Length: 85
Image (cartoon, rainbow, N blue to C red):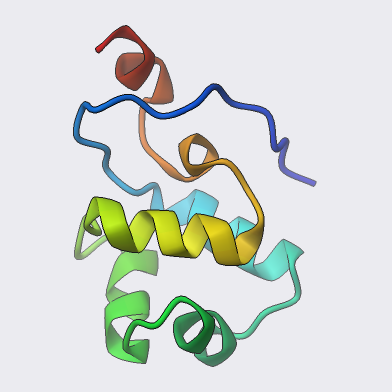
């Protein structure tokens, strides 16, 4: 199971980690359709996020993290860079 420990996000731009997103969605037992609906985004957009074709806006990343009940930083690339900002 992925760890759910990470510090609070900073104001630096964050890039969604598609592998972390998929791992957490599967860990929570959600289908793509269920996560997209709960996070209020389109299924195609979620598929693009999981394939790394789109970075995701901060607002979308936050809604996904809230839906998955994880800290935002467990879903992003290089969270240590965000801490330094």
